[in-house]
Figure 1: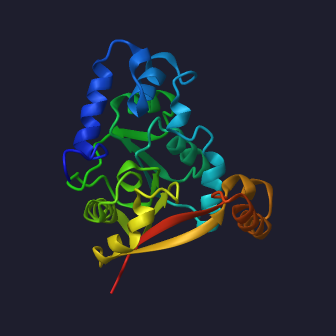
Figure 2: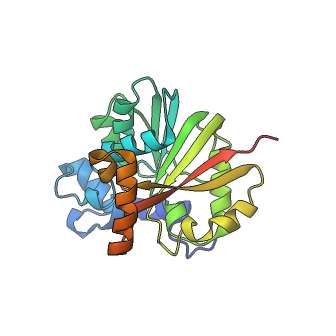
Length: 246
């Protein structure tokens, strides 16, 4: 990975350190600026909503229904940011041990304060990281290495690292903006060829807010019609990654 790849772990760490050392909060922008503002002054006015889903339960409920998730024992939220989704998963799956990890120390400090029933750790997610555990589900919501580049080898390395942390029959769920040209969505077939021990399947579902209001099949038909009429991403696509057992 070249030094120009700002999404690479070492570059993100440099950006985080720069944000943490800046005394003028108003001059800090981006994810790390929002996280620092949220930690020091509260989430309101921090612009954290630009980088985190601040109402994730609807999305979590929708994914749980389409994936038929029942009584998971362990969940990892990769790139958890302020921990809002991980905290919501602890609430939604009370029998599961939920762990949220993020490169941002400010975000993790905020998460530990506001979601004490969830485990959090400031971790630099990279292909060379130490194994965090064995998980039934690993969620990646808008995780930068999958959403901001077309480097198939780099993405395959990240997926292999996460795949090594799956329990038997575990799944990696990658949920992100689908029509982003610089993302896994555009190159997943090339990535698949580099991962003989993992399968990458593309699945679709209605937008979570539609599923929250309508029965599934009505929501699905409505999403198809709205996607065509509005030419917007109403029918959502997502990835499910699993180990291949010979």
